Length: 213
Image (tube, rainbow, N blue to C red; front, side, top):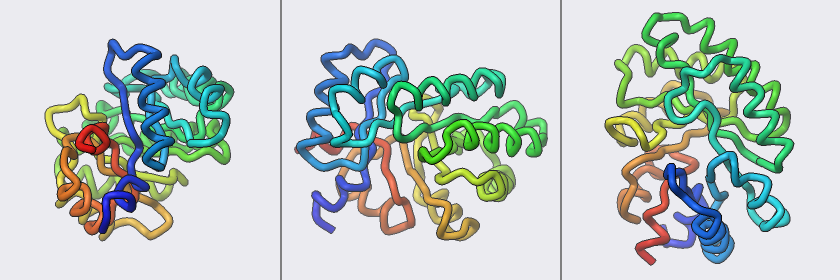
């Protein structure tokens, strides 16, 4: 798999707390130059980036980020605001407290509400695998499928660890082809990226690969 093909799977990402418009604009320019799948940026820059890109590249942003413990109503507002500002894709963080309480009905209901708010825009569900048991990961696969979300995503990149191949393999085993997979966090080489794609990842969340070029 050549580097161009790998980059077509990449959500070229900047989500640091101190990122400036100059840095976001650079991410947009690099995404255009290297034909990435999208750029993933903070919500506060979505309107400006959307205006700058003029539909030449999808704009992705994050919801309930990075901890996921906002109320469902707050997350719904975030999604609607992001879409109104021009977001094409939104990556939401589940409420991990609900997961640890075993309240998967609440998790599913929240994801459904956010998918309804997103409409025809892509919704990716970040489950933060580093904090989960194997049983919780499997149950969240069921929840993500039942909720109508478009993707399951491993990580925020702000947890204690990022994506691992075993989780991608588990997701692909447990989910239908309709539900796609995004691996994010700690992907720092083209060799690792290729392994994640071969394991079943449709998208990769990283900023490292273009830096290598």
